[in-house]
Length: 228
Image (cartoon, rainbow, N blue to C red; front, side):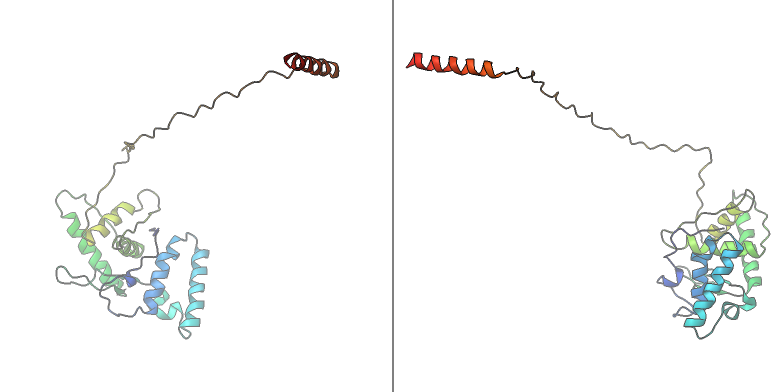
Protein backbone atom coordinates (compact mmCIF):
# COMPACT_ATOMS: atom_id res chain seq x y z
CA UNK A 1 0.00 0.00 0.00
CA UNK A 2 1.46 3.38 -0.87
CA UNK A 3 2.49 5.46 2.09
CA UNK A 4 3.23 9.07 1.19
CA UNK A 5 6.08 10.33 3.31
CA UNK A 6 5.34 14.04 2.68
CA UNK A 7 1.55 14.48 2.69
CA UNK A 8 1.75 18.28 2.72
CA UNK A 9 1.97 18.23 -1.09
CA UNK A 10 -1.56 17.85 -2.46
CA UNK A 11 -2.46 17.91 -6.16
CA UNK A 12 -5.43 20.17 -5.42
CA UNK A 13 -2.91 22.81 -4.30
CA UNK A 14 -0.63 22.57 -7.32
CA UNK A 15 -0.85 25.23 -10.05
CA UNK A 16 -2.65 23.12 -12.64
CA UNK A 17 -6.07 23.05 -14.30
CA UNK A 18 -8.90 21.48 -12.35
CA UNK A 19 -12.43 20.57 -13.34
CA UNK A 20 -13.56 22.82 -10.47
CA UNK A 21 -11.27 25.73 -9.48
CA UNK A 22 -12.51 25.48 -5.88
CA UNK A 23 -11.73 22.13 -4.22
CA UNK A 24 -14.98 20.32 -3.46
CA UNK A 25 -15.60 18.35 -0.26
CA UNK A 26 -15.04 15.21 -2.35
CA UNK A 27 -11.54 16.35 -3.28
CA UNK A 28 -10.70 17.38 0.26
CA UNK A 29 -11.92 14.08 1.69
CA UNK A 30 -9.92 12.20 -0.94
CA UNK A 31 -6.70 14.09 -0.19
CA UNK A 32 -7.11 13.58 3.56
CA UNK A 33 -7.66 9.89 2.96
CA UNK A 34 -4.54 9.62 0.83
CA UNK A 35 -2.38 11.57 3.28
CA UNK A 36 -3.58 9.86 6.47
CA UNK A 37 -5.86 6.86 5.95
CA UNK A 38 -3.38 5.15 3.61
CA UNK A 39 -0.99 4.92 6.55
CA UNK A 40 -3.38 2.82 8.63
CA UNK A 41 -3.15 -0.97 8.49
CA UNK A 42 -6.14 -2.01 10.60
CA UNK A 43 -9.85 -1.81 9.90
CA UNK A 44 -10.45 -0.20 13.29
CA UNK A 45 -8.13 2.72 12.46
CA UNK A 46 -9.76 3.23 9.06
CA UNK A 47 -13.23 3.18 10.61
CA UNK A 48 -12.11 5.73 13.18
CA UNK A 49 -10.81 7.97 10.40
CA UNK A 50 -14.10 7.78 8.49
CA UNK A 51 -15.99 8.64 11.68
CA UNK A 52 -13.69 11.61 12.18
CA UNK A 53 -14.31 12.74 8.60
CA UNK A 54 -18.06 12.49 9.14
CA UNK A 55 -17.78 14.61 12.27
CA UNK A 56 -15.88 17.35 10.45
CA UNK A 57 -18.15 17.21 7.41
CA UNK A 58 -21.30 17.52 9.49
CA UNK A 59 -19.79 20.48 11.33
CA UNK A 60 -18.35 22.39 8.36
CA UNK A 61 -20.44 21.25 5.36
CA UNK A 62 -24.00 21.41 6.67
CA UNK A 63 -24.57 17.80 7.58
CA UNK A 64 -22.89 16.09 4.61
CA UNK A 65 -21.45 12.64 5.33
CA UNK A 66 -18.90 10.56 3.48
CA UNK A 67 -21.47 8.02 2.27
CA UNK A 68 -23.53 10.86 0.78
CA UNK A 69 -20.58 12.45 -1.02
CA UNK A 70 -19.52 9.37 -2.97
CA UNK A 71 -21.56 6.90 -4.94
CA UNK A 72 -21.88 3.68 -2.99
CA UNK A 73 -20.48 5.30 0.14
CA UNK A 74 -16.86 4.47 -0.80
CA UNK A 75 -14.27 7.19 -1.34
CA UNK A 76 -13.46 7.22 -5.03
CA UNK A 77 -10.12 7.98 -6.67
CA UNK A 78 -8.93 11.22 -8.22
CA UNK A 79 -6.50 11.59 -11.08
CA UNK A 80 -5.21 13.71 -13.92
CA UNK A 81 -4.70 11.04 -16.55
CA UNK A 82 -8.15 10.07 -17.83
CA UNK A 83 -8.56 12.92 -20.31
CA UNK A 84 -6.78 13.32 -23.62
CA UNK A 85 -5.09 16.75 -23.70
CA UNK A 86 -2.81 18.42 -26.27
CA UNK A 87 0.92 17.84 -25.93
CA UNK A 88 2.46 20.11 -23.35
CA UNK A 89 -0.82 20.53 -21.49
CA UNK A 90 -1.86 18.86 -18.28
CA UNK A 91 -5.21 17.21 -17.70
CA UNK A 92 -7.32 18.44 -14.79
CA UNK A 93 -7.15 16.69 -11.45
CA UNK A 94 -10.67 15.36 -11.05
CA UNK A 95 -12.75 12.63 -9.51
CA UNK A 96 -12.82 9.29 -11.33
CA UNK A 97 -16.27 8.02 -10.47
CA UNK A 98 -16.57 5.59 -13.39
CA UNK A 99 -14.64 2.52 -12.25
CA UNK A 100 -15.42 0.65 -15.45
CA UNK A 101 -13.80 3.41 -17.51
CA UNK A 102 -10.80 3.42 -15.18
CA UNK A 103 -10.43 -0.34 -15.57
CA UNK A 104 -10.57 -0.10 -19.37
CA UNK A 105 -8.00 2.69 -19.35
CA UNK A 106 -5.54 0.76 -17.15
CA UNK A 107 -5.96 -2.41 -19.21
CA UNK A 108 -5.23 -0.48 -22.41
CA UNK A 109 -2.14 1.10 -20.85
CA UNK A 110 -1.00 -2.32 -19.61
CA UNK A 111 -1.37 -3.74 -23.12
CA UNK A 112 0.64 -0.84 -24.56
CA UNK A 113 3.32 -1.32 -21.92
CA UNK A 114 3.68 -5.01 -22.75
CA UNK A 115 4.18 -4.09 -26.40
CA UNK A 116 7.12 -1.81 -25.61
CA UNK A 117 10.48 -3.18 -26.87
CA UNK A 118 12.33 -5.01 -24.11
CA UNK A 119 9.51 -4.61 -21.59
CA UNK A 120 8.88 -7.46 -19.19
CA UNK A 121 5.51 -9.01 -19.91
CA UNK A 122 3.02 -8.41 -17.10
CA UNK A 123 -0.26 -10.31 -16.89
CA UNK A 124 -2.20 -8.29 -14.32
CA UNK A 125 -5.80 -8.60 -13.22
CA UNK A 126 -7.06 -5.06 -12.75
CA UNK A 127 -9.45 -5.61 -9.85
CA UNK A 128 -10.70 -2.86 -7.53
CA UNK A 129 -7.73 -2.63 -5.16
CA UNK A 130 -5.24 -2.74 -8.04
CA UNK A 131 -7.00 0.18 -9.72
CA UNK A 132 -6.96 2.16 -6.47
CA UNK A 133 -3.27 1.50 -5.96
CA UNK A 134 -2.46 2.64 -9.50
CA UNK A 135 -4.26 5.92 -8.82
CA UNK A 136 -2.44 6.31 -5.52
CA UNK A 137 0.99 5.67 -6.98
CA UNK A 138 0.32 7.92 -9.97
CA UNK A 139 -0.78 10.71 -7.61
CA UNK A 140 2.38 10.44 -5.51
CA UNK A 141 4.94 10.30 -8.31
CA UNK A 142 3.29 13.27 -10.04
CA UNK A 143 4.00 15.57 -7.09
CA UNK A 144 7.35 17.35 -6.69
CA UNK A 145 9.83 15.69 -4.33
CA UNK A 146 7.25 13.09 -3.28
CA UNK A 147 8.05 9.49 -2.43
CA UNK A 148 6.26 6.38 -1.26
CA UNK A 149 6.91 3.17 0.63
CA UNK A 150 5.02 0.21 -0.82
CA UNK A 151 4.37 -2.40 1.87
CA UNK A 152 3.30 -5.94 1.00
CA UNK A 153 4.37 -9.54 0.67
CA UNK A 154 6.30 -10.81 -2.31
CA UNK A 155 4.21 -11.20 -5.45
CA UNK A 156 1.54 -8.74 -4.33
CA UNK A 157 2.16 -6.54 -7.38
CA UNK A 158 4.07 -3.64 -5.87
CA UNK A 159 6.65 -3.52 -8.65
CA UNK A 160 4.20 -4.29 -11.46
CA UNK A 161 1.73 -1.61 -10.40
CA UNK A 162 4.57 0.87 -9.99
CA UNK A 163 5.77 0.14 -13.52
CA UNK A 164 2.26 0.60 -14.87
CA UNK A 165 1.80 3.86 -12.94
CA UNK A 166 5.10 5.19 -14.25
CA UNK A 167 4.11 4.27 -17.79
CA UNK A 168 0.84 6.18 -17.38
CA UNK A 169 2.82 9.16 -16.05
CA UNK A 170 5.30 8.78 -18.96
CA UNK A 171 8.21 8.25 -16.59
CA UNK A 172 11.18 5.95 -16.98
CA UNK A 173 11.82 3.34 -14.31
CA UNK A 174 15.28 2.84 -12.79
CA UNK A 175 15.62 -0.30 -10.68
CA UNK A 176 18.54 -0.94 -8.36
CA UNK A 177 19.54 -4.63 -8.26
CA UNK A 178 19.06 -6.16 -4.80
CA UNK A 179 22.67 -7.40 -4.74
CA UNK A 180 24.14 -3.94 -5.30
CA UNK A 181 26.41 -2.77 -2.50
CA UNK A 182 26.59 0.98 -2.16
CA UNK A 183 29.60 2.53 -0.47
CA UNK A 184 30.42 6.14 0.20
CA UNK A 185 33.61 7.36 -1.49
CA UNK A 186 34.24 9.78 1.34
CA UNK A 187 36.36 8.82 4.35
CA UNK A 188 36.19 10.67 7.58
CA UNK A 189 39.66 11.59 8.90
CA UNK A 190 39.74 12.68 12.49
CA UNK A 191 42.62 14.80 13.88
CA UNK A 192 44.95 13.13 16.36
CA UNK A 193 43.88 13.44 19.97
CA UNK A 194 45.29 16.36 21.88
CA UNK A 195 48.19 15.57 24.19
CA UNK A 196 48.03 17.50 27.40
CA UNK A 197 51.32 18.40 29.15
CA UNK A 198 52.15 16.44 32.22
CA UNK A 199 51.40 18.34 35.44
CA UNK A 200 54.42 19.68 37.29
CA UNK A 201 55.16 17.61 40.35
CA UNK A 202 56.59 19.61 43.22
CA UNK A 203 58.57 17.99 45.99
CA UNK A 204 56.84 17.81 49.32
CA UNK A 205 57.51 20.77 51.61
CA UNK A 206 60.18 20.37 54.25
CA UNK A 207 58.92 19.95 57.75
CA UNK A 208 59.39 23.13 59.72
CA UNK A 209 59.39 23.12 63.52
CA UNK A 210 59.39 26.05 65.88
CA UNK A 211 63.01 25.51 66.92
CA UNK A 212 64.23 25.38 63.34
CA UNK A 213 62.37 28.59 62.51
CA UNK A 214 64.03 30.30 65.51
CA UNK A 215 67.51 29.21 64.52
CA UNK A 216 66.89 30.37 60.95
CA UNK A 217 65.73 33.79 62.12
CA UNK A 218 68.75 34.09 64.42
CA UNK A 219 71.15 33.20 61.59
CA UNK A 220 69.51 35.78 59.37
CA UNK A 221 69.84 38.46 62.05
CA UNK A 222 73.52 37.66 62.62
CA UNK A 223 74.21 37.79 58.91
CA UNK A 224 72.56 41.20 58.63
CA UNK A 225 74.50 42.66 61.61
CA UNK A 226 77.77 41.36 60.17
CA UNK A 227 77.16 43.21 56.90
CA UNK A 228 76.40 46.42 58.71
